[in-house]
Amino acid sequence: MATETALPVRSAATTEVRRRVAVLDLGFIPIYWARYWQILNRIGSYDYVVFHGDPPADSGWVAAPGPHEFPNRRIVNRDVKLPGWRAIYQPVLREIMTGGYDAVILGHEIKFISNLMLLPLCKLRGIKVIYWGFGYHADIGLDMRADTAPLIKRLATGFKDGMAKLADGYLAYTARGRTRMIEQVGLDPERVFVVRQTIDVESQIALHAEMMTQDRAAVRRGLGLDPDACVFLFIGRMLAYKRVDQLIEAVRTITDAKRTRTPVQALVIGGGRLDAELRAQAEGSPNIRFEGSIADQAVVARYMRAVDAVVIPGVTGITVTHAFAHGLPLITRAGTMHSPEAEYIEDGRNGLMVEGDMQAFTDALARFADDPDLRARLAAGALATRDGLSLTHMAEQFDRCARAVLGDTAVRA
Image 1 (spheres, rainbow, N blue to C red):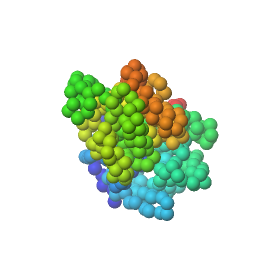
Image 2 (cartoon, one colour):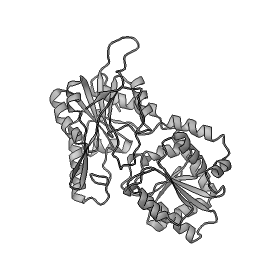
Image 3 (tube, rainbow, N blue to C red):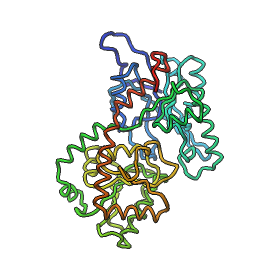
Image 4 (tube, helix red, strand yellow):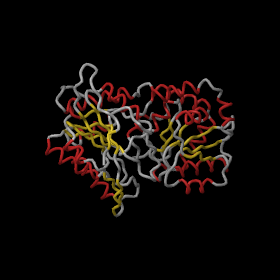
């Protein structure tokens, strides 16, 4: 059952309620996007009503605490366990069909089975449908598993492309996704927009500026870190496709083989289904520490002041923008599974996209640790890159797409 927890936004010049657009994306509101919805509803042309519930219990995701200062509807997400696949049903059909919505924005993940029902229902009722997704499909399966059969992956890709063709518009995370949807799927260029997916970079930049006033060596001592070490940070969910195990293996190899002149340490911030397993793997390595999940962004900023790079060996996504906001390079391994935000990484300028096997990855971390010039150059590149990422730009593109689909403008992407 949906519950309204924020009133519709009204124009300052009139008491008339604006047109309404329902938003169903991740199924919940991540802590890094609460401000985004505020910005979109402040500068946008419509009331964007965000439907949200709790994240899956073992996902490692953290939802933004309410109450929220933008139109939203609280719902109860229901897990539907199928053979080899966990789907999610959101009880929103009646609300969307009868709530006076002019358009609905759906996420690209087909695990939301209510979204699959909404597309044909909305088309029948004349409600415009916009998809919001990668624009391409990562080399993973229905439940974000890398071992999903190739046939299932092809079927999922074909199904999602077919759904996108039936929609009235598409919001692609990055330029690469937009190009694919136009050139390979055949969508109308005037209905495909690039949002340049990001987080609340402005707030993170403010936290970074505040932390830069504090002595780094003192911050490290306060966190129990070696002032002279090269410290790697993993931050995110402890799931198989993030490959935290590879960071543990690489740091342990570097330490045991005495590969570097500089001491190496690693911090892991986050939670998830592999938490206990990864802690067991790191047992006996005092230079690898698990800090648990941390929701307070000021505390996270303090850790980021103390480290030299964010390292995510596996699937890399929105954390790229978080790292860059704090002037930290992002180190990952090259591959086809990355989320679109990995496109922001420029190898050798603001991070490292390491080609090759685990040996190559370990060598890259060792080289980074022992090369202060490389660390400084990549950090400077990360700071320069963050200037091109903002929630305001993302909101403007989001709104342009909705206006084009609803016929309020003839703008081009």
